[in-house]
Image 1: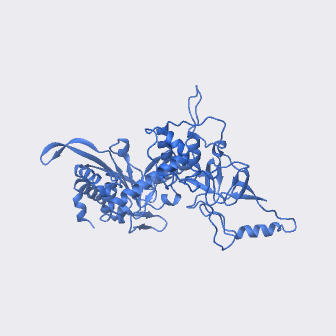
Image 2: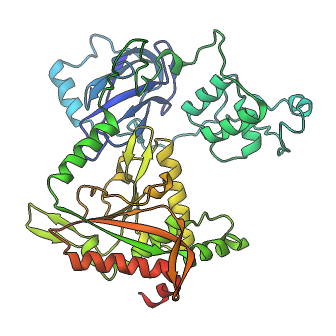
Image 3: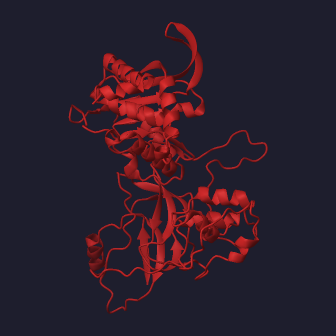
Length: 459
């Protein structure tokens, strides 16, 4: 019988989503919780798992379409048919539908019994296979590095459907990549690194993946010769960012203050930490130290870590720091958060920042990770920019822009010397924070960066 899957409630008040790409096509056989498609909400790209096991009957939307929450998305032909005598009347069907809770992303199908499900071994699309060791032995030694022993379990390598499709387009055998990376999840970066070593190029033969049958629309449609302009649809992250920035700019009175800081001692500290073998696995850089300094400074100026509640006529002051880090992605600017950043050590902050950045660049940041930040940092220095006037994320009272580190002549101990300099740009909500408190916060951050040992004086 035919079962329809409607776009589920993706949380955080989102009412619609854009279909980025389909990973299945009509006629494909799908399993429970297999990824069907990637959809882009106003905040992130989300993978939709299948709530049924059966055959894809039809797709109700094409790649690039905007679908409202609750609208039909895909239909399945599942095993079993209901006879006319057993078919419930329309009213009973409606009542049954109302009693059925929405099928949220990541939850799969509703359990039909309380029995514990039996997990089935995952197998590759071509059945049980092991790595062809003859291929490894024949490969030049300067192409393939020494790899661990090949798997003999017959399990499919750990990866997502988009990554597998990407590997196929490049002509990369993902099983060989799995032998190189071990048991961890294979990413697009792993595929790119492997393809670069072996000189792989995209396949152009007749073979076609499910994703290629429904390709994702390009961000900017290719222009034809003679055209004087290109029109790009406003949707997804870009649409949300535009609305949020307009709301923030015309709601909170912004004030920006600047301060140039001598960060020579901080850069020396970072260099010494990178030489410490115990910290070799942690990517501690200037942004991580700034994040730690911000968390420490917010304890002395809690107004920067507050929000204005118009409805309740209150200023809400959290006793924690959920630190937002602005990340520029292909789909636009997003600000995911590091939860309870004030409770983290410097290595823990470094690990959290690395994970946050990798997730954002892959487009897999969840809507929940984009909500509830209390203060934000934007690293404009990565683009070689010294200063700017950042706009507050809605619901926050402060955002700090971190400029590039540059060697400049500077007065140091009564003489002119080449020092490593950085400019801090703080924008704050003048309803919540006055000028003195904003200046004190910037000075506290600057003092820590100028003399990292001063952090020992703060609680």
